[in-house]
Image 1 (tube, rainbow, N blue to C red):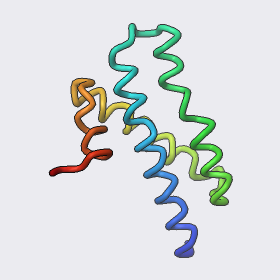
Image 2: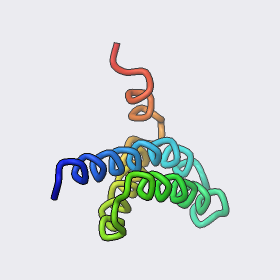
Image 3: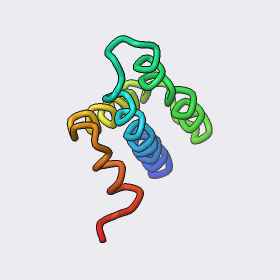
Length: 94
């Protein structure tokens, strides 16, 4: 695997994780199996696919990207849905 592909895959994983943090925060406040819950889970897919295609990442990496996206959703949900991890990413530790 070349360095360019490795960096592109890593960038895609980070984008998938970070995009799903606020969506996981939003999802944690929704009723399970509701339309909004479905939307919170699937809203990031077009963005992540666009990033993957723009960076030239093969479809073989899609399961890994899906794991990163699910990880972002679950990370925020496990934080109690209080937005703490999203706040740390946007504001930082002062």
